[in-house]
Image 1 (cartoon, helix red, strand yellow):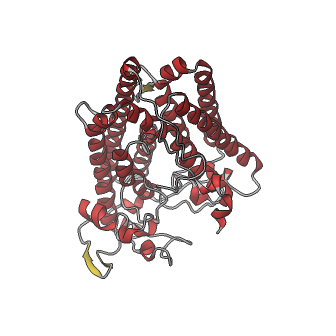
Image 2 (cartoon, rainbow, N blue to C red):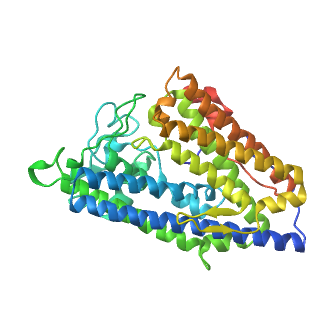
Image 3 (cartoon, rainbow, N blue to C red):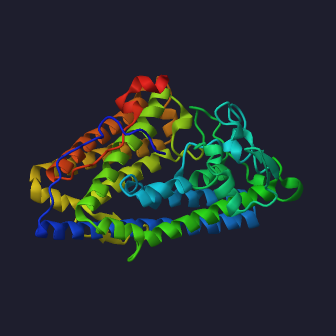
Length: 421
């Protein structure tokens, strides 16, 4: 999601055109950057195809085992994808596309049955649509035939319907909801627990419409694969995203630091971490149905470090590496490079602590509970480390004379009182 550019943003530094040797070095750094992006999206695509196979197995033979296998495949698919989020913000081709695959939070009642406070609201009347149970409905005064769940229905009719961002019909989190269902545990232990019988046939079907639910899951997973195929192609040789960052060395480096800084500060430290802690709201965790947020945060942080160091380790263990932003910074200011590396290590370590505690049984949504001092400490240590590394990223912008960089902000960090208005 996009947020107002405030706070640490709005750097307006005087740009200096690089000399021939510096431009040549920057071009090599940008080649590495594009290679890492391509590798990350190809890994995301491979994991999404594995997820699709697991979803097909669940649909063909619903059982507790095939449901668990599909959930495990979804969690594995998040590992490479989250490491690609650092390519957002600075690359419009990624930012314009991202909402199709990773938009959150979502009003899940648009898709399927819900309980509790979820459902229609003044802000979003479609929050209780439940298209799985309603093959016909009215949208903006128009009768919609949803008797067949098609890619066009999900992508062109339902996704961000009526211009409301919370109407998320496609992507990882729509699939996550269809595999786990709502997490109704609040701050208590436990994730979503959708029964596998929601995909059963005949009288064994629970909550009705199992055939339509299966078709929605199938189509959403197919779309995820299709979207990742498209993005991987944009970073391949001759792809539009690769060409864009290679067209101008200074603009390409700006894209790198914008992505690093905006993910580090406004998005991860702010909207995904500090905001949820301020509101003490378990619904503000990124992977709220599966309780996988600790992994998503960790791999976001790792992705930022990947870009700075110019190296990425793929899901099959292969390593992509080359000339890096760190090399350019070390040449311009060795002390700043050492500082940047140390702060990246500190943020990844802080996120790893959250991951370790969550995997030991204390989930991220439990950490968000009011009065959970240890949870607050863990989250705030990571938030503060991310802020510190963003300060260093700002100094990198200065050291490399990259004018016109804007780092995305968050009210939760820049104007906390606005959060409660």
